[in-house]
Each structure stands twice: as structure tokens, then as C-alpha cells.
Length: 259
Image (cartoon, rainbow, N blue to C red):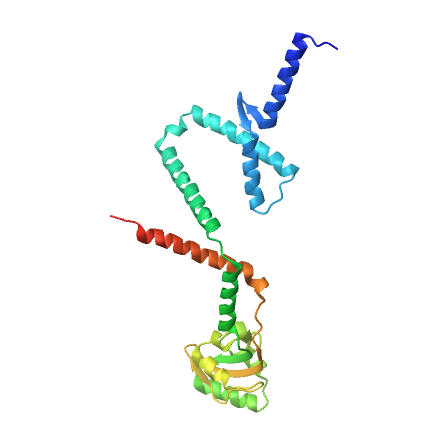
């Protein structure tokens, strides 16, 4: 079958147009809008954790078309020549360059699994030991605390007194319950007094801290329950990455000659 010259020309034009549209999202006022713009935005959406489905791609297509329309109008009005635009462009350029610098540093200076394990081991060493399930009643005066101790020894319920008299609204509402915590979580005077108590024991005398006078009871004691490495690895990784980046930034600041 022979194809006429006009038919062949039409086929070539159609093929060329098809290829152009494959490379471009659309042509706005005669100017092509490349598909790569959609792909760049799609990468940002994906990096934020959102799936890029057909609906999102349709939204991105409309976005890049609108951007082209607005850009063309801005160019017509000479926006690019204004001092404010030039200043904003320079700030944007700096932001992009600095972000790329930091990303390049982190890529070339990754945190190793060994680094994460070493940091975790330090955490375990600092937080291992005993945890205490303690209760307290906080009052303003020593005499009040002594009277409370006498009442409890006489049969009054610790939890009821805490709800009525404790100045600590958080624990007081829960019968003085401070939940599980290591001794180091409390101020020294409180922790030292608590460490002298066994399971189920009540402080014999009020304990004074900067907050007032405490009546303390230890309900239970256990070995500290620490999270497994896999459970805290993302947080440790982020922490170490931040430390490396901060050191890099500070190093550049220290070496800079500023007059």
C-alpha cells in the first residue's frame, strides 16, 4: 500500500506532536510545560510520606499548569526586575544551597550501626538499676506532715489524705501516685529518703525539699525496664545525625574569618 506525500507528512506531524506531549504536561500560551515539573513535585509528595496515585498526579498537573500561567503573567508585569523579587530570589537560592550542603554532608558522613549501639549502651548504663513505684503527700508545713504520718499509722488511708491535702495536684488526684521512676528522677532530698525505704514502707519523718514537706511511701521496687535497641534506634539515629550536623556547622563557623 502506497502512502501519499500529504498523508506521510500528516503522520510525521502527529508522531512529533505525540512525542512532544509525552515530554510535556501541556502547552500554555504556546510555551511547553515539561513533565519533569510534575515528577519533581511528585518526589516531594512521596518524600513527605504520601502515596502518589492518579488523583494526586491530576492535582499536580493542575498545579504546574497554574504555576506556568502565573509565571507568564508575572514576567509580563516585570516582577523579575523588582528589588524585592531579587532579594527574595537570593534568599531562596541560599536556602536551597544550604539545604543541599547539609544533605551532602549527611550522605557522606552517615551514622553507623556501631555508633547507634554505642550510644544505646551509654543510655542503658546511665539508666539501669532500680525503679520505684512511690506515692507522696506534699504539704507546706512540717507539723502538717507529722500529723499526716501519725494519721496513716493510726489507720487512715494514704490515698484519701493525698487527694484531700496534697499540694501536688497531679499526683494528689491519683492518691499521691508518682508512677514508676528511677530515684534520679527526683530532687536529691526526696530520692535519698526514698532509697532508705523498702517495699510498702512509709517515711518515719517528713522530708523537706524546695517544694515543701513530703510524706513518702514506696509501694513497689523493680529492676529498671528499658526499651530494646530496635525500639529506640530511630530516635538515637536522629539524635546522632543532629549532633554530627551541628558539629559540622560549628566547625565552619569557627574557621570562618569574620571582620
